[in-house]
Image 1 (tube, rainbow, N blue to C red):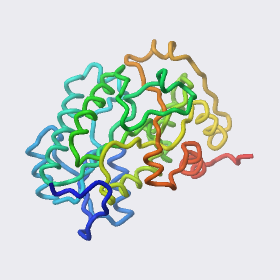
Image 2: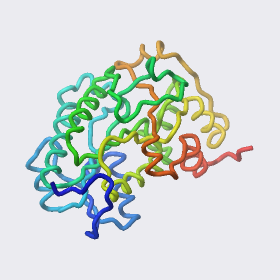
Image 3: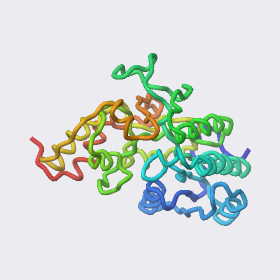
Image 4: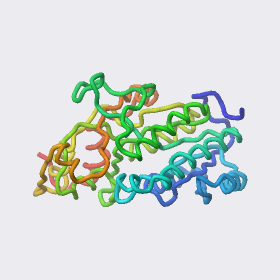
Length: 302
């Protein structure tokens, strides 16, 4: 095969990234990062489930690496997937596998932005225990159809040695106006649950994903900042740094279940593997303050 061994540095050949997900949040940010770093890139125009259109993209662009930030999460949320199962399968399963398969044929590494919402706290990984799910653990959460398709495709992608699977969770960025931002979502909810979770600070981790491509890393990676943070802890930071009069109401998981169609995943992912590769990686609470709240600060913090 044409792709290098896991973890070897890229050759002297200039980088050229092919990115899928132009209209998505992560796909858009990736393009901005490539521009700021002077990396040559192009967005794919083909539909993931259309193998011929993907082949045309690969032939035209001749990339060194491919990034998949396309996928169906559902609008306004994953409940959409419960009533659009075929559409969800077409993109999240068929499309992702088609792209991985084509990249393998061409000897290309695929950086695939996946999800960590395929686990939930259990007796071996209890809430507040600090014991997180590792990369090799088998998903135990299929409460939503979205998560079910994501767990299915992750399992199949294990067989593709050219794929780097990044388990993203509850993504957050410094753009507090973006409706996909987890902070923006919970500040707009009428009520929120209060459960510690692993989360992904995109401002810190998306540049790391570009570095992972440069290092030709493959396999499954828990793509979250180390540690956990709860909804209330985030909203307290939001109040302290952004909006001093901000208030919110909590409700229980049982009460939440009455207003959503599909259950939601709550978990801690073990980020040891990523931290070993990138020792500068900040913990979730440090990253929130450094990358999100301080740059947006409107309130002097005592």
